[in-house]
Image 1 (cartoon, helix red, strand yellow):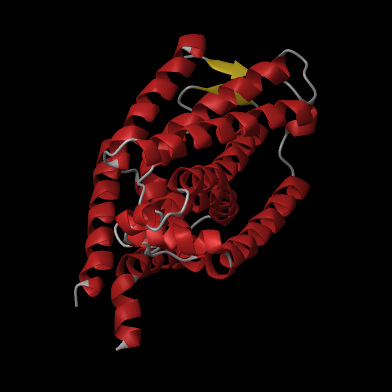
Image 2 (spheres, rainbow, N blue to C red):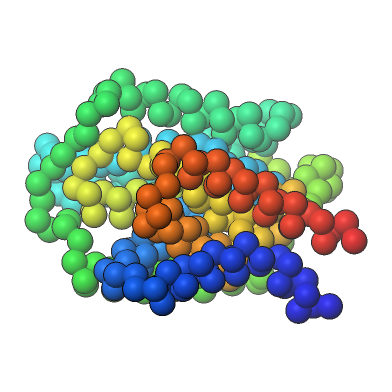
Length: 302
């Protein structure tokens, strides 16, 4: 029964992987694998951040807009000649500040968190648009260009982050509070715990991973744009859902985040190779999200 449940929960992953490797057997270019690896190491940090929020019962719709805005900030600072480390520190502080605000609003306002994150998405995306419009802020810094050493360092960071999250979710009180918030937020409020502080800490932890993703985009594109991270919104949500991460019942694992992100990246490359239009891609991503949620909820009701 356990094997059947695992297969049912991962049916979308299995289908995507099967299609990808069939295309590989049919003569897919070897360059695709390097592209998959780079995209995976960019998206996994976004999925980690979204996973933290979703396990706590929050479907975060603002993270992509926050990443776009922070790339604009970082690019502007680097273009003016600010050293790399202070500029990246500002990017991280920006995300931490937004994370604290998001956690405070989610805890303080008794409305569905989706409404709050949607409002923040609109505000942040338009604020960055006021400064850049439809243009990109481009800077020329050879020391931030991506290299093999950069991707190797990013691989190590992703592994360290995975181990940290496993420890955080399984061995710490905040990990337990995280799942409690996703399973029964009312019980956490009535328990006497500082609900607002817990929400803020959780949201700020997620924002650290969003900040890392923003830095990666800055490093590999040498630019900032109000649309720099917007196209990651639905793929990352789809990745989290395909990984069995749910904002409805406090469920989610680091292994699921990896599996879902691999599937999402493979899916994106399948779409590109087959030449499918972007509008159809968005439709398919929406269907994947719906089906994944149904697969995650159905076993819980049986």
